[in-house]
Length: 224
Image (cartoon, rainbow, N blue to C red; front, side, top):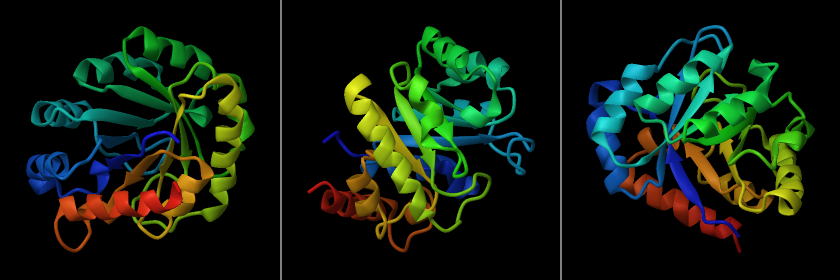
């Protein structure tokens, strides 16, 4: 079983207190930070950009997992890596040349991820599994935080984990969207090891650190 990684999503943070909350997440045991970038085209909202990634990178030593939910991500790879992204994930649906983008991300020195939306079959990643570091399975339709978790997406996690066992056993599989303490055991049992959590960390009652600890405890139940 791969090590579980808790990745708080800064999309759900209080941007008036972003620096403080990032530091709280780091002190509270987060393994990485998930940073969503949206362009208003691939998904309706427009949000975090290079300046936010640069600011977060100056604030923390945590691994920065940048998720590009943008059309034509080709021209954004270098700027985000140079701004501090340790990993860059692009969507299968956003480009006709995802294999080339994966190659370009790795050439820039970052880890490369490929993501799929709820309506995209897991088989679309089959030809990429040997070449990526991370497979991202969206468990909500991308664009907004706070949506309900789509349980049926876990069958895709299972398929990817099974296929990767032959070709890339070190592959990280990330679930993103609606992840909380109730569904984390199912995510882990399906084969996910990177758990993106937004509102269940930054919107939880109590401290950010307590929320992260609670999610890690829930994950241990799914790994038995």
